[in-house]
Image (tube, one colour):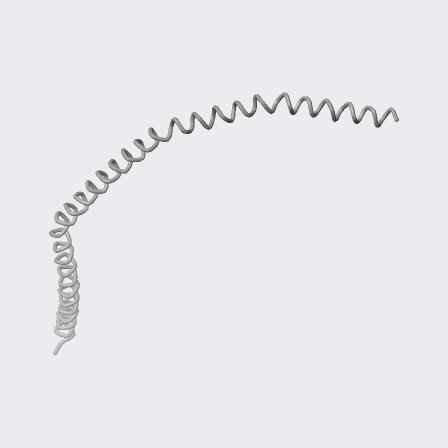
Length: 114
């Protein structure tokens, strides 16, 4: 066998190795693409479930917010009454606090003069 024949055989073997490697790689890629295809096929059903659950959650949220608003409307007069009581007690205690402060100031002045 001549050197040309040996070279052709080596090139053929190298081409065969490259072809087998490419076939193996493409087969793995095909498996990955089949997995992606299955996932994509399931996606619309999953999205439908997600959107349905999201809609239910939003409806429950609206109901809860409505109930909270009703309860706040019920409690609002109590808050106004508490505010009014606080204002009245402040108005009543302010003169007493000033009177007490004046008495303390006078007592301090008497102690300083004695």
